[in-house]
Amino acid sequence: MIVSSAIALATFSGIFTNYFLGLDARLSLYCIGICFITCIYFLKVRKSGIATNLDGVALAFLLLVSLVLYWPLNGGFEGPILLFFLAIPVYLAYFLKRTGYYIMISIIYAGMFGMFYYYFLHPEEIIPYKDAGIQVIDIAISTVIAGIILGEFSIYFKEQNDRIKAEIEAKTEVINLQFSALKDLDNYKNSIFATLGHDLRGPINNAKGLFELLMDDEISKTQKEELIKVASSQMEETAVLVENILFWARSQMGGMHLNNVNFEVNGAVQAIIDGSQNSIKKKKIFIQSNAANLMYAFGDKDLFLIVLRNLVNNAIKFSSTGSIITINTYKNYRGEIEIQVLDEGIGMSESQLSQLFSSAKSTEGTKKEKGTGLGLKLCKMFTESNGGKIHAESKLGEGTKITFTIKEGSKAEVIGSNFKFIEVD
Image (cartoon, rainbow, N blue to C red):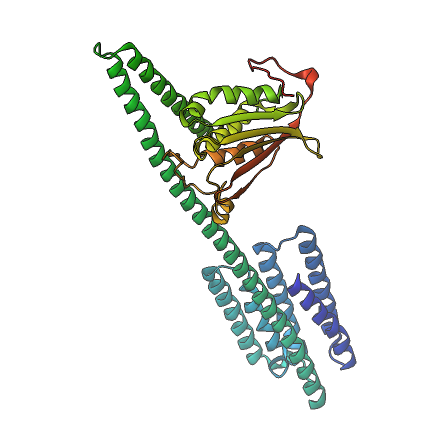
């Protein structure tokens, strides 16, 4: 569009220049024709939003024919039209590939030299200037106009190159970021799978050893009962780990679908507490649930339970013997159900807290318990999937409080469950 508008303006000014200089009237007619053609081209490109190679070559051909007709009427070898012939190769460079450009330019130059040779043999067909003053003025004006056209070409090509360069740099930056993200993800998954392999092998091998001991007739009934308790506790921990792995794997493969229902919150909390009794007794800690009344949430119940179970297990992991874990449930000012899990454990530093939901590293518990670093990442992912938010507060040596939210539900639409309900005064 820039090129066609520049040529249109140049030829429009040529209409008046040729008239006032007293040059052949046909020159003004040619200028009107070129101006009309380039204006149509301008409107066409503006409407379609793109100039095709065929459009560009067609316009170049029309301009070339016009210049050939124009040349003998404007002083021939003594006139300024050769300046405008220079614009054609620059113009074609945008539309043609290197090979096509060289072929087209060779044809154009061959035609031009043929034209020059013809008029060299027939100089009488060239219309000369009336006097030297008109010649100087015409060449000066034409030089300015040709310079403006070539300048517009150069600016346009520079802007196109700058735009392409900027796009390439932007795409390169995106590719680098994607590559870095994929590399981090790959490292994270490798770390997860390496840890999972270790954490799954350990309980399975331990369980295998325990079952072999249980089959030993020399072991007393009391010892067998203790071994069964240990095996049960290990299987419980392994079941939680496997559940986390399966949900994480589904989320990574894009196969996780939400099943949003209304459910009673306090019953879900008590179910998690009941399921954690072995771990609680093992570490000799206490857990309590505080809720003013029954509340109902709306969301994916399984995701909610995984989040709460992971937070309770995490609190148990970092609690010392004799400490208390508290679960508070209430409705906040935004009309959401808010659940807090507070412990009196070892707490975290500010740097640990800032990376709590993003780091793949796992910290040992107070009894040297190990983990995968997957649980809290799942808590954040699943809380947000349920339309809620999660955040943590902690001070080193003073314990941790993790709070997450879920949308409030309706009592009238609660789907039956196997939760054990409790009422707290």
